[in-house]
Image (cartoon, rainbow, N blue to C red; front, side):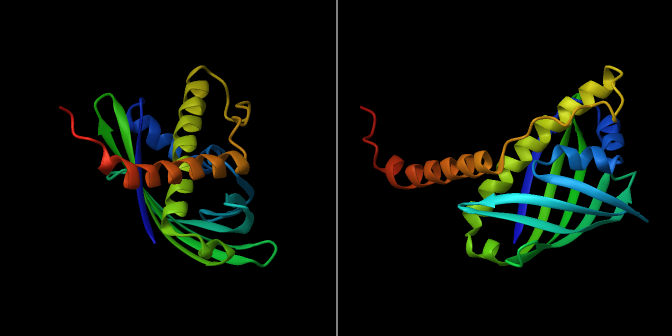
Length: 194
């Protein structure tokens, strides 16, 4: 399943690109993600916890940076993991492409996601909604971290920004789904303006 999203960061593209080179900082911006080991050669071990409806999944796995293109400002990561309780597996190829947007940076993220087990039972809409919430939280946390580093706070001193809990992310995704259903079924039937 291919999921494409984008967001803007009010920072110059070179500064955002430099931030993307610090993988522990990037991972700390993603709610539910935790790096557990730097395995060398651009490979990292970690965990990702995500809630899909009533099911909370905790994936343990590895991520490997397969491409860093300085000129194109593109980074490609392959990641794969298995749920710690044996309820499924996930693999993902993520491409982040940075481009100047006015004084800031537009970040386009393409995620080619494959799920099996418990996570695969949810439809594309729910998975897309959860991804949208995660990307918004990621962008906001990344901006806070870049601002803190600009103020002279070292990356080690930057406190892990408070991210939404799995329950909160699930609830926000549910509201997005309900809003989509509401628009689909009720807005077409509005009376024409007179």
